[in-house]
Image 1 (cartoon, rainbow over the protein chains, first blue to last red):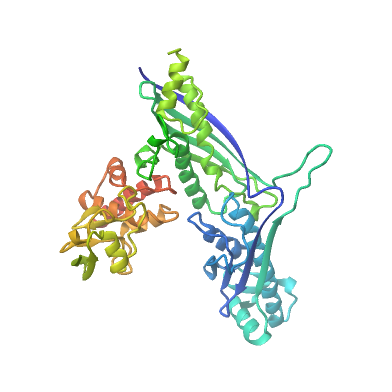
Image 2: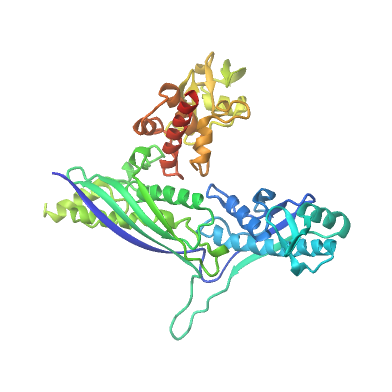
Length: 334
Length: 159
């Protein structure tokens, strides 16, 4: 009886958003009379940072300070349509809609500024600090606040924009069956190190090391936060969580969250993550999504590490001590 | 049968009438209007409702409201000093130790109980202190790091 160490590797390709076309998200951007901008969308921030990323995307596209952008995701009944926060789609789908809306609003902003400065809108740029200026002549400038005031009270214009993202439908080739179901994939590779006790069947994850290719990390801290949390959830799926009974029948299964097992803070291993950035052609500033993929690589990596450690293949999640001991017995002909 | 309960909530004397069998969580959230302790599992397994009673961490869903009569109760609302956040709250923000935020009030209160008792905790002590608090988003590591960071900052301020 002994503890055996093993190492397993897993590679993951993960599609972003729902496939085969469609999957729409819309966004609206408008300026208030004081030159602040509001992004309205129905993509919900449930802690993954949708609001922060939306704010960044709108500020970057408009060319205004991030402090001057507010995000309203208050109500999916009354807001612009969005399919929702799922399928790793928020940043990619809603992000593209936010950029489109911000571009249209920026056009109006520059039109009004051009009228005030008596120049061509094409000769204007934002300085990123709250001013519109003539390219090459920054002394000829007007603040975004003043532009908004003139638009509202003098020119009778709404500095606003509409944004829409829709994936083109992919038709199936009747001859070959070929199609293009997905526009963007994210990729990951993970190495898991485990220790398996062949007396108790218990698996301890010693470390997870991974590289994630996610297009572009729009907010590195938010990306890392999701990947570390997802690594924990992957361990949880691999080794703990199930609504099914362990042994011998359903009446022994969990009936509430007291019995639904998940790893605690003491079960968490060190997680090392490297980000690779290869901008996606149709991503917002090249970004893909990491929402669901963050929890998937640990599962096959841990399964492979268990095989490396004790030579048994567990093909059903979670990889419980009971399943490992039964597999070890079968391998030994017991 | 109802019963009047008087307690000190985050430094303020308050009183409310509790139903017989009512738990402290209901008293805090519904009678006293402090919704910062969260109602999660309601069976003492998730830690989201953790509050301090006379300085000790307690699961408010398992404590009878009337048992808090005459006690000092601290919720996460009592951690900040006016507009100044507690070092734990600052460290949680700086360290991205919250995502959905539902476990955060209980985590902060459990961590405060630890730092009050043990100002320079080891990693193992931090893990033990929050072992009764379930988090579904962060993977715990950022929370453990944030508590250790808060302890370092508080030690620095004391000189």
